[in-house]
Image (cartoon, rainbow, N blue to C red; front, side, top):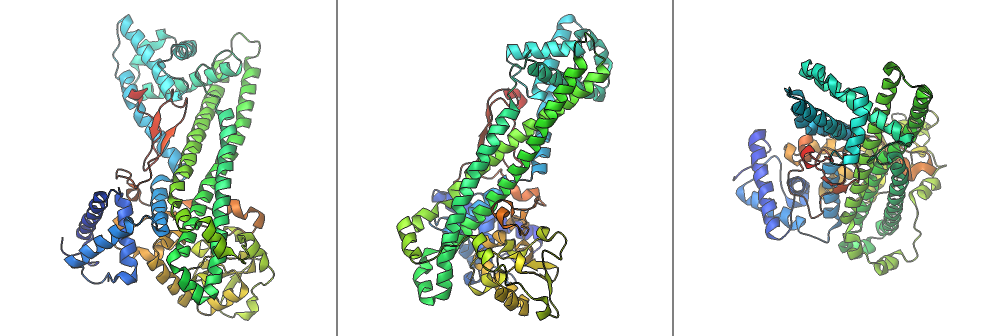
Length: 581
């Protein structure tokens, strides 16, 4: 392990990088700090990118270089009072634990299916002949129906009795003989259908006050949980934004006063601002998902009422109802309830994720006690993002001043608020010329379209200066990001850096994009935009040990049969194994 070069074959280079990562992990562990491989890999990338460390990607690294790399990474990973490290840890944690709604639900259902596998096989491979064997098989089918539906525990006698009665009404034990002659596939299909019909019957009986043992009132739980979670995130978001506005006010003064800049350098104010802005971004992504949950639940509650009403009308004062009339409604009811279960699990995961982001804000109170902040803020005006945008609303770019550049405006551009803005919507010019100050860009004064990318600015002057020489400023931003690797994710610079580090091991691939938000009243909530899933699940390996922050442990009462501890990892895994129930 003496040499590593960017020109090495990828497999050889990766094995060398893996050794470096392992060594970093062992060194940190010796100092009492548990570091995941993903975090170590990110730190390798950060250290190599920073020009002040003197690593040249075109040159072969000698053994001494490798030792230097390990040493630098370890010292950065052990620096407990560094907002940059907190931000990187937060990014790695979010990357490993957040997945888009669609991906999450798909994986959740896949896990449920896989965990029912052994129970299904016990039924489909069964060769029951005697009465005792047939009775045992029927009991297994009842257990399967309960496990699959998640409506009560198969060890609760009242629940089992109710489910058995519902199953007998549509599939008496006498029909087992016919069931046993079916092919494996047809047996599986019938079991799924029986589960849905039994679930529909039990939900209908519960609504009529004649059953529902072990069935949680998920609509009511969600109607309470969603506003509570939203409120919590909103208040966290408010705190984060208020703190970011205060840091920004101080940093603006520093940018205009070089002496003050020297004095405040040890305080790591910019790093603290990046930490708060990253936290704010993640909260907005989570909040956006919760708003989607809320919209889905609202729609589902209406559907639930309509379906139950339809069933009541269909069975009203009739002694017998054709199965062709009621079965489809029972099945629809069952599918709807599965959606309620999905939303409940999703809300729990998102709420948990929010809680587990908070420990990554640790350095702020250490570095900036309230007394220090008050001194720094003395005589300064703290402005909100919205306030900054309103200040320059009228000073718009005049397209006639530019022959070659293309400018976009809300009134003349279709889907203006859906454009994907560079640097997560922060002013490109300010960031480049102040060594990294983040000020919100204002789309309303004009968006610059340059090489198929879109840029916003906080003032018209900033827009004009950037437009004179975009490449110059784009390069300055890239150089700044090399010194502060957390900016790669915060400002979404992944593409610019993918070629520099040829090892997939060291690439965090999460792409979370930021759309413009022109409606100022919605700025706080809705500028969180679309979320693209990671291209490569291998970057999310949760098999590794985690950072100091504990892994989420989620508790959901009554879901999937009773109470239990549910842990999740890469693709959030929330259901207990069948043999644990």
